Length: 112
Length: 117
Image 1 (cartoon, rainbow over the protein chains, first blue to last red):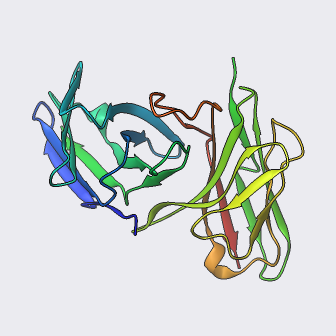
Image 2: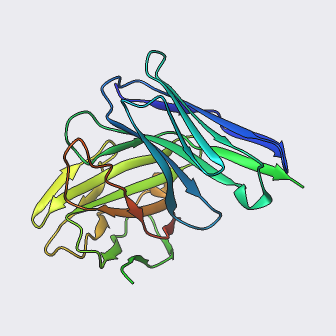
């Protein structure tokens, strides 16, 4: 079935790079997403990648997609304390639907 | 500015009571979703709707119901609240375009924290 997995916790020092990993099971997913959830708030879309791309860069964010291994990663360069949040990856259910399957979320803690 | 709101933000209820959580969006989006967030499970889809009078079950729909009488609102009802339904509930919406070339962002509300005693 559809399942998206992430590690639960990541701790980094301010200024370092953070890499958050995600594995998914639906090889026919068309879009994969990264959402950010700050404390006490809803989720906000950070970035997304279309399945025919290997990499997407957006300022401090780099998304890598390895379709063969069904692996998605989010790299945050020069991590700041404001980046502390829960990060969710999500895949779009196969077919032209609007459903997303979310991962378990990774709590990123940035130490000053 | 367009937005999506949820009410109440916090709710405490007792086992067996009926509870309704409200979700209202002003984007005129066709698609609306309800999720619950629990530690170790991430977000799980409860119900969703692709338009007025359309509702569909998600992966954890037992004990929940929704109805869609207009574009703006998708209330979530817990028919008989159980302690296992203690959670944070999020509503989301997205535009109606569903073609493979549209990335179709989902916009989330601020969440409702529900405690069932």
